[in-house]
Image 1 (cartoon, rainbow, N blue to C red):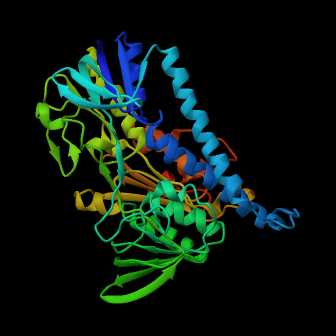
Image 2: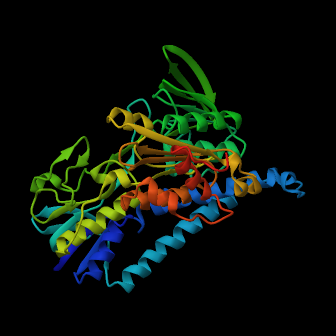
Length: 465
């Protein structure tokens, strides 16, 4: 028996489920095949449940500093089982919400594991072991990615964790070593350090958060160290020696080898696209270093086949995947006036303490591209709302093309900057110059005023610092 659709999406993560809903809105007959939970890694094991954990850590931090706000809080502690239960409950709630959205938008939800059977055809193996055939004019691959491992760095779920294991600890480890200081590694390092664990972070590059602007990276590193984290840069873990309930890590830091024994290790060394076992070779879909190759519309070059999200490569972000899904579907449906996505306008956010957010070029990359720059900075200590919140650490940095006034990049570190960055994302999307930003009225008292002041500072006009 074969069902025929205009579009079948393989994968129900933030790219896949959004693409399916948008396709249905455009009048296409749509199905989405998902082998596990709707919402994918992001909703079930990534973006959302980690933010629940980090919110717990944030509240715990405030409770420990209650006296700073004139409050009394004695006997403060936590229940790790309850913390994990809350995080998992939020993920489950949102996954169920996608089922409702599918029903509302008339998207067929097919539970099972799909593989390309040929042109316009998928074989889907259900949880009952039975295989059915699904036909479609268009097939969109949105299979996402998984945690990357190396031969000498493999997770076992007990002593060596990936992000999945780190989200559901049975007990709170007293010590941790995190391998990798990108967003995933630093967020877990931040959570576990706040909850009392001794945390060591090992990073191969010469600084933590290496994709961020150098000043933001340096400020964040200083803050992490003040919190008690040990940061080892230009370093790599060459061996893991597993004990009964601990791991001894051999760390090579600039040629000097050190052994560090910890309760648990978290691997955060990147991700690999889920391209295996889905039949790409049957129709000639090309891959490059483990990711599917597409054009700016998500087209694979093979008639009827599209790919979006993490499986297509960096940046590995949920919001990038969702936007790619919409673009690809609108291209399929023939929507007029469609524009490809400008990846330089995709914001990046790291939800550690302090938060980090950015969009566009860093100072280093802007200089390397040959721009003459005007750079503005404004510190949190100069903002009334930040001081009132007890969050006076951080700064906002804006980078402009001195010749045209184009906003080349914006970089932030401090409280709630992951919420603030969108203002600059909108500005870049609208191709706003410094003039429009200067003439924009920002509400007072808000943290957003620092965005205005940073722009003013780039042109020697800052008012409050």
